[in-house]
Amino acid sequence: MMFMYLISWVAVVIQMLFLTIGVGAGLYYLAELVEEYTVIAKKVIMWMTNIVLILYGGFIIFEEMPFTLVTCGVLSQVFHHLILRNFPYFDISSVSFIGAVCLFFINHYLAFSYFSFTVYTFSEVMGYFTLCLWLVPFALFVSLSANDNVLPSYAESNIGLDGRDGDVVSNYLSRKSKRYGLLGLFHYVSEYFFPSRVKKIF
Image (cartoon, rainbow, N blue to C red; front, side):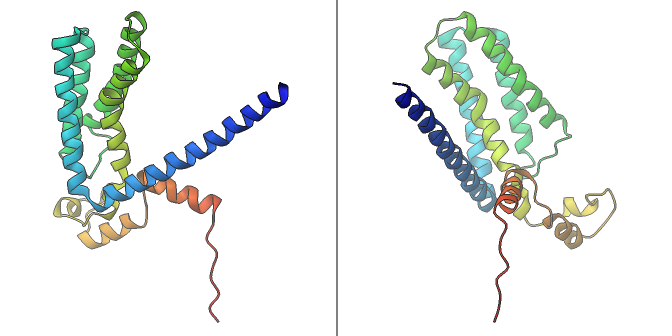
């Protein structure tokens, strides 16, 4: 009996490792797709925010959810629309980005407060959290590294990353040496745990 119990825990640990590797590989693939197709990614995320807004309208009509919960949800989607105006560029010090992050946590608090006192099944609660709270922020999180492969524009050329004036090419090349966002994290982890070997040329 104890032996089977230990085997079950070992199996759970192995399953969690496989799940983590699978999720990491999926995130990496999604980040590569977003970098490759930034225009399509912007349209997809825009459609996601519009669908979530429609869902909040359905909550008002069919579910009678609290006004504060629905209002904060709609307001967060408005901030997501504001973030998408400059997609794939993200300014983490902008009002729209900071507001979206703050509303993300406020929405979670309001949702936990509501669902802890209201009877819903687990699948219904997970459906709300997945579609209304996690889907668009997850898509924006995956898109954080999308501007690494975007060609430079005139707007970037006026002021460099360090606040000094510079030309388009030098600003772009100085940015290309540093990778930020999800892909940058994956490349760092890959290089740290699996350093590439130098091939000998004979």
